[in-house]
Length: 358
Ligand code: NDP
Image 1 (cartoon, rainbow, N blue to C red):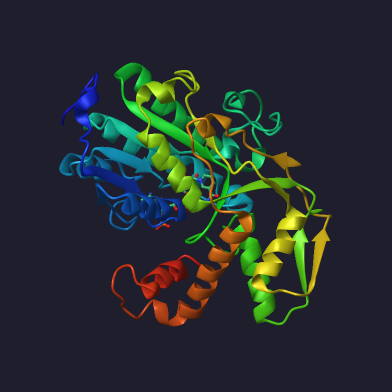
Image 2: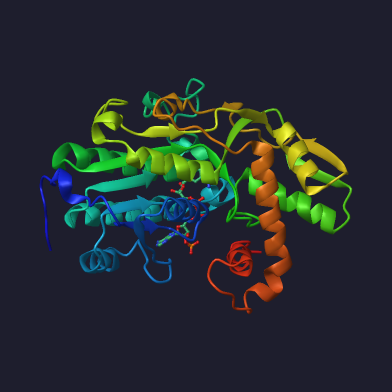
């Protein structure tokens, strides 16, 4: 095994960069693959979860030892909404720590100079001043419901920073806001707020229900980013020189926020989802249920200063997402049995259908 202390800056080849996208069958990983394929010039290395369990240290070690890789995008993680986080806290902290530790450590051991770690906006304190800037990290207590997951993500950021400080690697971290888009998780209990809403309004239309109940007052404000905009932000960041990125932060506060900068109330979001899906019944807000933090907005000015900006509006992104969701629903029964050529609509629908986890 090759162990390098200081990595040569020239270790990344300029053409046909060999990029390992970890978690490429997830929503973010799939968007990264789309963006990298659209850009061209790289050779993608992809492994499914059943093919390579990134929480298994010896499997990850063998994989890196036998595969030539220039750059890693680490989008594999145990991810879920509030229900999943509160029911499986041990899985959330343990699996995420294992995945991050294994991938980041083996990337370094095998001389990989460039890596992008996907964190999350939940790393910030529950009462962080809004909009939340990068230096809010570790300035106060976390939201208790997803604290184990957030601690694992903070460990991932600190692992990247510490590798950079001690070994001279170029491991970067991004903290995306709430994401949505094709390939999202629509599981009844495991999903985030927006995919859960899409599924509930869709099922209300399907079953001719005239009312949809949304938990909470509808007043909290949230920020959403279309996943392809995030993927473009990641590629944009990875194209910048180490000097440019270093100038945005400090060695111990080097992560960057990625958000749309636009806030919407849960009530307005529910109206918009209903409209896009074609639900014409009543939307009821059950304010006996908790609201969570009143406002959650990222300050993404650092990344924007590099010239990145989101391109897909919430309405357009929702239309695309709902189309993909409905297509997957239609194909759900046949999708898992019919074979289709790579890249075809059927294949995309089959992949989507497999993620509905109904
Ligand atoms: P998904 O659940 O859609 O994708 C995660 C992927 O990781 C899946 O393909 C999953 O495979 C894979 N995976 C999980 N565990 C392992 C493992 N042990 N070995 C190999 N692969 C594994 O999540 P997202 O794409 O939404 O999230 C990706 C990243 O983006 C995460 O780090 C998350 O924190 C971050 N993020 C996501 C946000 C969102 O709103 N979705 C918001 C902010 C950040 P399988 O499904 O087969 O288990």
